[in-house]
Image 1 (cartoon, one colour):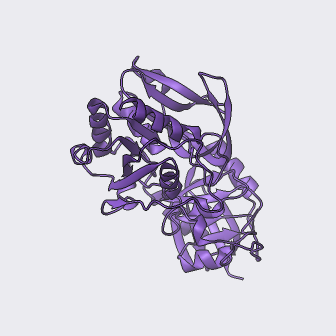
Image 2 (cartoon, rainbow, N blue to C red):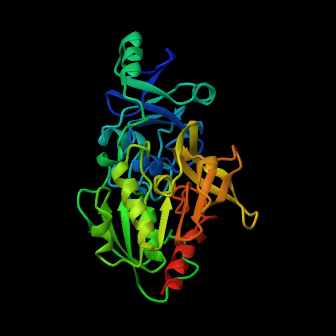
Image 3 (cartoon, rainbow, N blue to C red):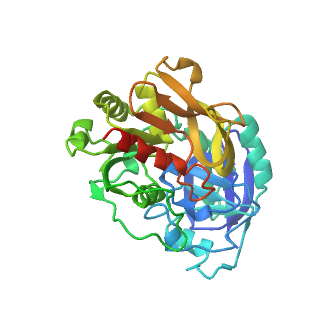
Amino acid sequence: MTEAILALEDGTVFRGAAAGADGETSGEVVFNTGMSGYQEVLTDPSYAGQIVTMTCPEIGNYGVTREDGESRAPQVAGFVVREESPLASNWRAEGTLRDYLIAHGIVAISGIDTRALTRRLRSGGVMRGVIAAGGADPAALIDRANAIPKMEGSDLVRGVTSPEPFDWPSRDPGEFDVSAPRRSARRLKIAAYDFGMKWNILRRLSAHGCDVRVFPATTPAADVLATRPDGVFLSNGPGDPAPLGYAIDNARALIDADVPTFGICLGHQLLGLAMGGETFKLKFGHRGANHPVKRLDTGRVEITSQNHGFAVRPDRLPPDVVVTHVNLYDGTVEGLRHRAHPVFCVQYHPEASPGPHDADYLFDEFIRMIEERG
């Protein structure tokens, strides 16, 4: 068994065993409260630059399968678990979690007290950290952790966006897909900005009767609008929205063009900035598949899938923007809608994967908004 060390910037050191590839990795250490869905977490581009700690004590028990990926390969900087399951007990499994991590070069550590780590991150806030598999000097790792660039002010989107535009292939729903409650009366043409998009967003748009063309994050809004889409979608993605001036300018242009626009996660934050708001970094973020959100117009509570470290300030929004959803853990903004333009967005992930499908109705709302615009 190969020794592994996790060192945090505050000097805390955890010793355990290597659970993935040999070597060293660094990033912002965060925690995810989901009990399952670890492959979807690993492959979510929103986790770029982050070392993800799973709070569930055993991870890997149902193995991995290509069908559960949310992108072409794992996107996390590193992975932390309490106990790594040596077995893949699932008829769908194509291999074990360990083999998957090794094959994709993901450095991981197991056998540490993830409850203690989570409490430290919850109390002190997320921290920069380094995982070294194969032995290393803890003091040197702490120094390296403190030298890592901070998440604030960094543009991580350019590293995960698609290099070229592409069309998402329409297909019949698979055995495990959630059926759409209502499809559009005609095939709708959706232009989707890829800031680090999860594939299940594309699957859900397709399931609701949309043909989707995906554009790189830096594509000028004029080029997107020139394709004459029925609606535009702004995706999730990693890191701080504030330095993404090109994306904010494009979002502002979409609003001014009065085209139906829907944003999720980073797309929500970018629309918030484009509509005149401000964003800030959360102490430890919201990451997991079990977070309660309240829809303010109905009072309904949705259990949601979340993955973000930044949020929109509610007190800096202009009067023509209304808050539609709030987080029941800390009261932060989870949804916005423009009063004059066909624009709305949510901070959480209605496409789930992993997580519940309580908020899938938002895709139907997007379709309805487009149809009402003619």
